Image: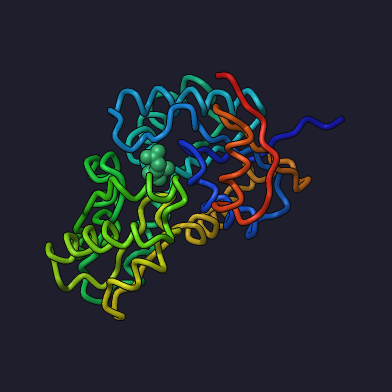
Length: 274
Ligand code: DGL
């Protein structure tokens, strides 16, 4: 039997399934392993050291499963652990493997959306405090001003299934008003957290019609397709059986129940003890 070399997709929990949904739809031919580190989620408020330690441990697990390529679908992990993993850990662990995140693909194309050059970024405390979005966006578009706002209540609202309830309106409106108070000319808002696409309909209620909301799923999927085209040496290492396995570091049943909301279809998960 041929060994399997899937693409690894990582998140702190279920949220990354919103990104993975787009990846699996855009590139269905590859094999995939999704891992949610639910037992240690949320990552959003954790320190740099902790996020790096947890993320690296999961990346090493993916490598042990035969994944030559790992996508960090989690914004917080992309913001706080990716650079160190790419620069310090990969050369030592597996120099031919690659770990990619969700921030750069978004930063690369955000200039196509904004006319006013005033861009809002909504994310976890960790993502916002890291300054990664501002740095990456200004690398590609120095003329864009990035205004950030952390939204600590949004992840729990989504995880507890309250994203569609009247209770969510208060915090959606509050954080959006706080962002727009920083700069009323913002015309583009990046949903820089895996969970926020589920609040998109509510956000539209509280925003003027000229403001575009940018979710990352399709952007990351297109960027991955482009990456694989530009890197045949990686593309050829990946096995193409269309198989998907789901793992969680916490309860599998719980993961399966949430997955339907985030992934849009039923999944079977296996609990993993790291
Ligand atoms: N996946 C995280 C992100 O995209 C949100 C959940 C968490 O804080 O762990 O930032």
